Image (tube, rainbow, N blue to C red):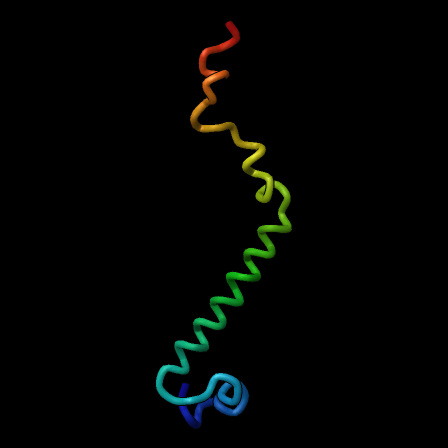
Length: 68
């Protein structure tokens, strides 16, 4: 983030200015986006309970032999 850049007065007070601060800002923004996407996905019940809805890829030994 540039020392005299547009964001130096606002975000520069929080994360600082100079070399390497722009990538810090990107990490913070991406981290916040990931948290928001995770919260949004958790609120979608079908996605949250997908383990219960999908059949197992490998059947259990009881169901593989059938009912004998």
